[in-house]
Image (cartoon, rainbow, N blue to C red):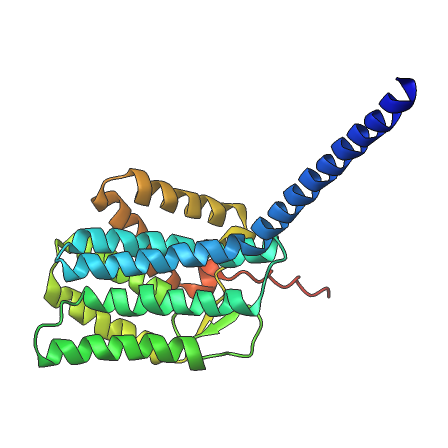
Length: 250
């Protein structure tokens, strides 16, 4: 009996050890997968928000469309910060981010203009092409700096304007025309590392999340409108992520 039970006991111990190693390996692989794809998941969520916004606009549910654009704005600010924080930057992530940005801040935002005639259709087309040009060609070559107004801020401004004006299409189209000029202007704007910068910027982002998810549409629109306007009008004075140079010693 002793000679028989010994191999059985050894076999059972070996089996338990093997299963524990398998569980540990599976857990570590799952955590590694989550680390590598957390930022990609935010980009996909941004893409889904953009596609949902397009569907809402096609069904004339423009208030829901604006809310989804503001959600996409917040997701876009978070995905790059998460990728850098987790050391998970990749070519796939960059492509996903650009595709999500074009869908949400280009196509979905242009549909807010409600193109129904030739002129409004041309304006919507020009807006989409401006976002496309901004994403593809406007590289500044300068660290911490964009060239041309980043399209998420233009989209946030248009969504806030729509909600605050009660869907005034004339005002919205005029604002869109100005945003096209800002995006194609090739002026310099700071890299908005909101979640990787000063504490007050993180507080602004947290306030944006609270305003969009838990506040009435009027509060959310005013908050995001003020946020976007401050970036457009005072880009380096307020939103620069570069450290200020030390004073020279005399």
